[in-house]
Amino acid sequence: MGNLKSFLFVFSFLFILWLLLVGTTQSDEMIMGGAGAFLLSLVYFRSGVHSEMKMTIKAVIFIPVYFIVFVLALVKSNLDVAYRVVHPKLPIKPGIVKVKTTLKSRVGRLTLANSITLTPGTLTVDVKDDILYIHWINVSGKDINDSTEQIVKGFEKYLEVIFG
Image 1: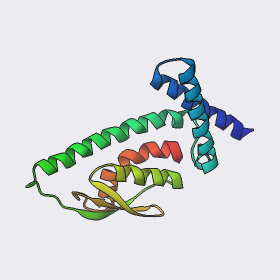
Image 2: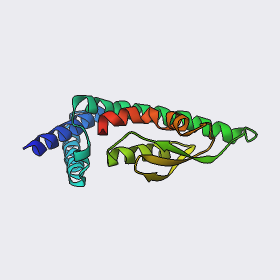
Image 3: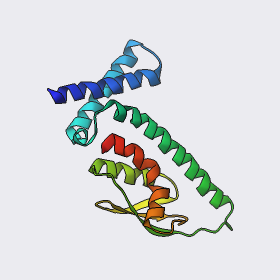
Image 4: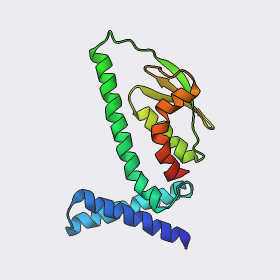
């Protein structure tokens, strides 16, 4: 019965999010939103991701907060890389750094690795347990702790609440 409750919670969250994004209650929009929310909820539960997510109110609130944090990091890094392209004399110091994560969930670490990769200037090369190897366009970290602070911590504190 707990899975049905969780399924209905995820379905309701996605359907309400759809309605907020579309901004209308026309029947065809509601049918499409309901069908989409239902299919996404099915995929979510069939993939097993739900077993690694914390289903708390705080976690649900942190999902859109994480999205905002990610978008801001994305914009900032895009501007940084664009600035480096426009000013080719600006020194860069590319390299691969080792960072450490405190995330225990496989899906949480996957989300972290993908977030880092999607952010211009960084690329996740490998993940081994709690260690990530990141190619960084301008290495400024002096050691693993410094690199972790600069690359990982901004994402990790939100993913910890969502995934554990």
